[in-house]
Amino acid sequence: TLAMVQVRVNEGVLEGERVRNEYGGEYYSFKGIPYAQPPLGDLRFKAPQPPQPWENVRSAKEFGPKCYQYDLFMEKGKRDGSEDCLYLNVYTPDIKPDKPLPVMFWIHGGGFGSGAGDDDEYGPKLLIRKDVVVVTINYRLEVLGFLCLDTEDVPGNAGMKDQVAA
Image (cartoon, rainbow, N blue to C red; front, side, top):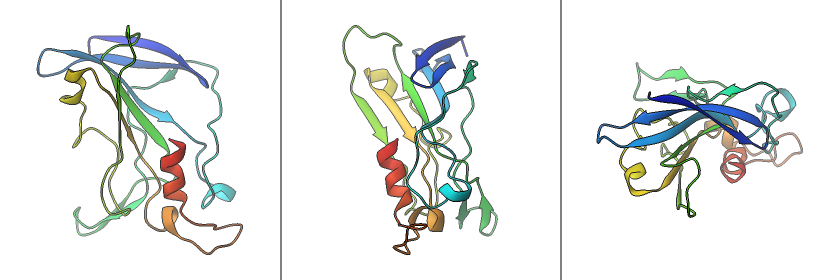
């Protein structure tokens, strides 16, 4: 980390980091930005709702929790994650570019059952070298994201609606 940096978004002020990558370049990193209210309680299977604004500066230096999942590839099928998981990460080569930059919106794989938008596996280090803004997301997985009972309480496809909301 080279320095802290703050930006204002609709919901409040975020504090991220200016980071040097292994190629000697720099980029700005903002992690764990809520793009919806936590899908808890009555919102569990519903479409995502806009995030609540915050008053103080919100730290954007850590990833938000990944969505609850049963990962077959970890420790004999370990369950991991949180229901409060609707967060995105933004990596940009410039805070105030002179011209608009292309945006790569990356949705992780995992068959709608596992994965996350953290950069431990899929970092921005290569793309950020080419003046591209990289956005990665978490979205609801498995039953929490794709159960459909075709009712008011469980209308279905919450995970796809998360992707659209992000």
